[in-house]
Length: 247
Image (cartoon, rainbow, N blue to C red; front, top):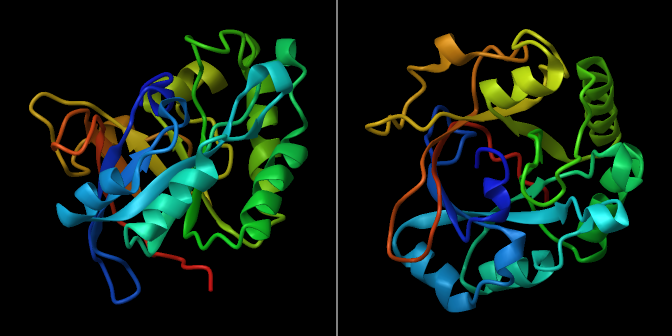
């Protein structure tokens, strides 16, 4: 998911390791918006293979309209539920480019939360994706790292006005490029899901100390590979975090 991988993948697999009675142990699949709604059979295939958590893109840059709810979100959610998924996360790829007249961070967050509530979607964590898009909305973010940091804080502050559980997805490289330093802090109270594609793949956090960024002390997830099973094209991740289930 470096750069715009969220928008080029069909499925991302994630491993969630148990660390206490309140944490979930499961594998997960992630469906991205550009590939449209994944069939129930695709979700069922992944679930039958042991992947019991779904992560669905539910808000996209849509730079021509300043950001918007992903067209495939509800269809993927319904199909994942139909396939038997009970643990579902969402990810939020915000519109950030001044050139695109993006909606305010609060408006974008509100649009997503309203959509989730209106459709009575039961989700655990919403992941905000902080990375620069070099493929579709190529003028996302700014060349001014101070402005980028201020904008990112507007998104996290907006997220904290909701009743949902939020996390951040990024990489050491993207963080440094966007905010000027790996030490730049947006909000270290959020869970962090980072990416590091090593060869061979390392489904562990042994690299975190050398890649740590954003003031996050302990990672909740790591994306460690970009290939996997017969159910689709995906990236692999390992996760350790409480389910935070909305009831």
